[in-house]
Image (cartoon, rainbow over all chains, first blue to last red; front, side, top):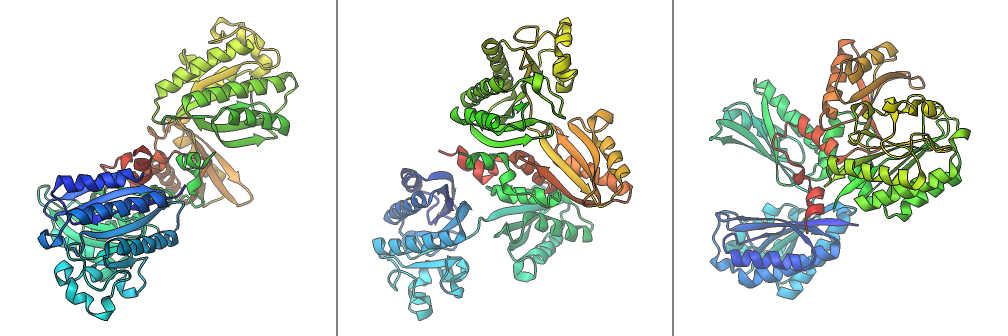
Amino acid sequence: MAVIECVPNISEGRRADVLDACAAAVRQSGARLLDVKPDASHNRTVYTFAGEAKQVVDAVLALVDAAIRQIDLRQHKGEHPRMGAVDVVPFVPIEDVTMAECVSIAGEVGAEVARRHNLPVYLYEEAARQPSRRNLEDIRRGEFEGLAAKMQKPEWAPDFGPSVPHPSAGAVVIGARMPLIAYNINLATNRLDVAKRIAAAVRHSSGGLRYVKAMGIALTDRGIVQVSMNLTNFEKTPIARVFELVKREAARDGVAILESEIVGLVPSAAMTNAAAWYLQLDNFSGDQVLETKLRNAT
Amino acid sequence: MAVIECVPNISEGRRADVLDACAAAVRQSGARLLDVKPDASHNRTVYTFAGEAKQVVDAVLALVDAAIRQIDLRQHKGEHPRMGAVDVVPFVPIEDVTMAECVSIAGEVGAEVARRHNLPVYLYEEAARQPSRRNLEDIRRGEFEGLAAKMQKPEWAPDFGPSVPHPSAGAVVIGARMPLIAYNINLATNRLDVAKRIAAAVRHSSGGLRYVKAMGIALTDRGIVQVSMNLTNFEKTPIARVFELVKREAARDGVAILESEIVGLVPSAAMTNAAAWYLQLDNFSGDQVLETKLRNAT
C-alpha cells in the first residue's frame, strides 16, 4: 500500500477557527493528520498528513478550499515570506511509491486547483517543468506584494491558471520533494565562530555536501552553539556522513560534539541507513526489519 | 494493535508434506507466516509468524496438532538436540504488548497443549516458574532418549501434563523471550585464534556482555574468520556496544572489521537505537519515526 506524505504551509498562524477548519478538511478526506504546527509570529501553519494517493489529493483539495475561503493576503502580516494563502504544497514519497508518481500527483493537483479557484499555480522542486523553478525561494522572491508585477514577465507565467494573482489568495507553489530532516548538532563550546565555520564547511551553498543547508547559531540559555541543518535528501547525503564531517571539522578546532537532535519526524530508512553504515552491515536490506516484513506479509 | 511473534521449532526438516501441513495450519488461523526455515541435516524446521494474541495462540495450537499427528520421535534422527516433536515454542513481544502478557500466553498455551494431547509441558526463559528452567539447554539435556528417566526425578516434573513422556511426541518447551538477533562480524584476517579469543571476550558465559552468545568460526571459502553471535536482549545489550567491543578487541590484535551482518529479521528499534547511539541523539523518541507515527495515527 503506497504512502505519500503532504506538508502544506498556509498563511495563517493565529486564528484557531481557520486552523481547525483546515484540519477538519484533511481529516474528512481519510488522510491521517500527523502534525499541525502553527507559528504566530510567522503567521503561518504547517500541516503534515499522509495516506494513499487519492486520500492525500482529496485532503489537499479540501484544505485549499477551506484556506482560500478564510485567508485574505491583503490583510496578512507575518515574519515568514509568502505569496499565497496556501503558500506551498510539497508531496513526499514515503512507502511503495516513486518520486515520479509524486511529481505526477503534483501536476494533477496543480491543474485542478487552478481550475477550481482560478488561481495561478507554480510547480517546484522535482515537479518543476523549468530549471528556474526548482528552487522555492526563487519563485517566491518579491512575495505577494510583488506578485502582480512579477507575473507580467513572460518567464514568470504560471504553470497553470491565469497570469494575474488571485486577489485574496495570490498564487500557490505545488511540487514534490524527498523527506526533509531537520537535524541539529550541538557543540561543546560557546564559540559561535566555530559553529558558523562548520556550517559553511558542510552546506552545499558554500562548497559542502550537496543536500545540506546549514547555519551556525548560539543557544545562549545553554551557553553552547549549534550547527542547525536541513537535510534535503537523506539517500544521497546520509545523516551519518553529515555527522562525521561535522565531528571532524569540530575536532580540528579542539571542539567535541555534545549531542545531536532530530526535530520532528524522520523516515525509518534514514535511521536504518545510519545504523547499517556504522555497523558496517554491507548486505543489509530494509526487508530484514521485522515491522516492515510484517506490514508486507499477507 | 498488539503484535506478538512466535517462533516454534519442530523436529522435522525433510518431509515437505509435513512442513506444508504445519504452514497451512498457521495460515488458517489468521496469523501472518513470515518465514519457514527447514534444515535437512538438523532434521528440524523453524517457523516464524506473528499476529494479535488470539491469532498467534490459535496458530500454535493448530501447528502442534498437525506436527504431533505426523512426527514420531522414535523414528527421528538429526544433528540438532531435541526432546519433542514440537521442540520449543517461544512467544516474543514486538509491538504494544508487554513481556508479562507473553508470559501469560505461554502459560495458557502450555495448559491447553497438555490437556489436548496429554503431553508434558515445560515453561522456560521469562515464562519459567523455577530458576532451573530458565535455560532451554538445561531442560533439553538428555534429549528425547533420556526423557523418561529424567522425568522420574521430582525436580523434572513438568509444569503441565503427565510425568511421563508422550510416546511419539516427547515433551514440549514453551516460553517467552525477547527478540533474538543473529549477528555476525567478519574480521579481515584468516586467524581463527583471533575470532575465538574475541568470541570468548564478548560472550556472557566466559565473562563478557550479559546478553551475548558467541563463537569464533572460519569462513574457509572466503579465507576469513567470523565472530558469530546471538544477541538475546538488544535493549539491555545493544548492537552498537557489541560491535564497538568486538572492534576494539580486534584492533588489539591488529585486525580490522571487514563487515558485519544480521541474519534474518531485526526489530526496527534495534536499528534505531544503534543510529541514535552513534549520532549522539540524546532525546530521540521512537515516536519520531515517521512510519511509527503513521501506524499510530487515526
